[in-house]
Length: 452
Image (cartoon, rainbow, N blue to C red):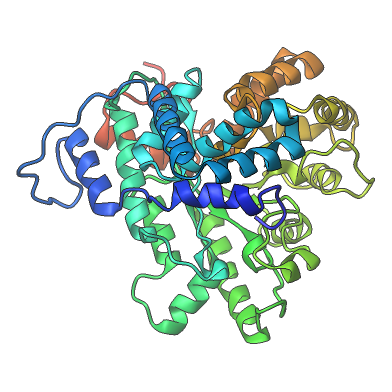
C-alpha cells in the first residue's frame, strides 16, 4: 500500500480488523459441501447440518461493520479518532470522518469473510448482473508471503461456488452465475520447478481450466516479471529472467491453443518493488510484444492504463487503443476507476468519446469492458453505486448501444462465449451439461441446429 493514502493510524485500524482472520479451507469446504449435498472428493459428510439460509448478505455485512466499530471504539478509541482525522484530512473533511472510518472498516471486513459470503455481498449488491468472473491472484512470491489456503485449495473452493451458482443453490436469492479466473505467477512457477514440486502453479492453472471450470487466467506483472523478454530487474536475476521467458512461452502457447483468455493488471500501481515500477513492468508495451508473437491470444489489460483527469499523448490508454486496431483479441477493462470523482469522470468520458470517434482507434469501443476490482471499491464514497454510476455516465456520453456492449457484449466476445465453436465456450457448455443440465444461460452461444 505504499502508493495509497493508507498510513499510520489507518493502517493500524485495518490491521486490527483483518488480523482476526478469515475461515480456512476445511471450514469453507465443509459449508460448500453441505450446500452442494456432496463432496468433490467423496469426503465423509457425517454430522454436517444442511447449510442455513442467510439473511441478505449485504445487510449482514452492515451488521458486522456496526459490531466491529462498536468494539473498536470501546477497545481503542484513540486509534479510531486518529484514523478519522487522517481520513477526514485527506478526503472529505472532518465532518465526514466517521463515514470514512466506516468505509475503511467495511473494506477490512470484506478481507475477513469467506469466499461464499463475499460472493453473497457481491451478487446482492449488484442484483442486475447475471455473470460474474472473479479473478484469483497469486502474489505471494514477490511479497514474501504465503496464503492461508494454497492455490489448489482456492481452486477447489471457487469451483464449488461456481457450481452452486450453476445449480441455483446459493443461500440467498440471485440469478447470478459465477465463473472465475485462476491466478498465475510465472516467478512462482520458476521457483516451484527449481524446488522439484510435483504440483506446480502452471499445472494447477491447466487443471483449473480443463477440469475445474475456470474460464481464464489472471496475471500480475507488478510482482516482478515482464510479459515477454525478461531481463534482470530488482531482485530478479538474469538466470531467473531467462527461466521466466521459458515458462511464459509455454504458458502463452498453451493459452493460445486452448483459447484461454488472459487478464493482466495494466495500471501504473501496486508494484511489489520500486525497481519494478521504474522498469515499467505493468505497462502495455510488453503485452503488445506478446500479441505480436501469439496473435491468437485473448488479452484483457485491466484498468485500461488507469483513469486520469489529464493524460499525455503517449499515455498507456492511447497505446492500448492504438494497438487494438492491430490485434483482433486485445481488450481492456475499467476496474477500480474513481468514477465518483466528477473532476475525473468528465474528462475521462470525453477522452473515451474522442478515442471511439477516431478511425484509428474506434475499434476500442468494441473492446472496452466493465470491470470493478470489486472490494477495493469499498473505500470509495457510495461504492455500492459504482456499476450504476459508470453505466449511466457511459450511456449519457456514448449512447445506449455502446453502453450495452460495455456492460456485457464486449466481455462475452473476450471470453469467447458468443462463439459456439470457441474452446472456452465449449468447455463451459460441457460443464453445464454435466453438472446443471437444462440451466445453460442464454448468453452462452449454442451450436446452430441443422434444419429438419
